[in-house]
Amino acid sequence: MPTNDEARSMARFTQLVVDSRAPASLARFWAAALDGFEIRPYDEAEIARLAGIGRTPETDPSVIVDGPAFEVCFQEVADLPDVKRAVHLDISTPNRPLERDRLVSLGASIVQEFDRHTWMRDPEGNDFCIADEQAGGGGSAVGRCES
Image (cartoon, rainbow, N blue to C red; front, side):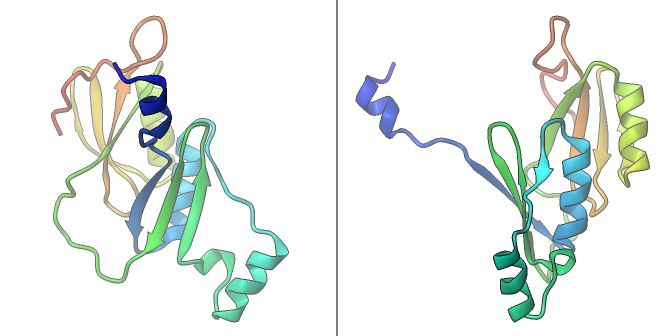
């Protein structure tokens, strides 16, 4: 167990960075998909900065989605590999069929259904799983992800 000084100096998870072909649209998908997450608002100074480089909020090469405990940065990358990525998100819900259908309506696709979770892909093809929330709220029933 770390001492108080060690605990204060330990690293904290603050941002997940996701490479993307179209950061603004992928950020909108995940802001709509996750409870408590929203796209960081653009102020006039940021809009002016983007205009200075020939961009708009819709073509911003780096879009931040703020969440309750961390933020997700979607950054533009011209060449993304067409291979399965080493990391994916697991999210949980009390009503998986309803949530699965909602995510499909936002642009996600279903890869495979399992007993306790569904393997899906976001609009850019990134893998994620939605799992049945464990009784009592919190945590997921996946245990070990099979995707």
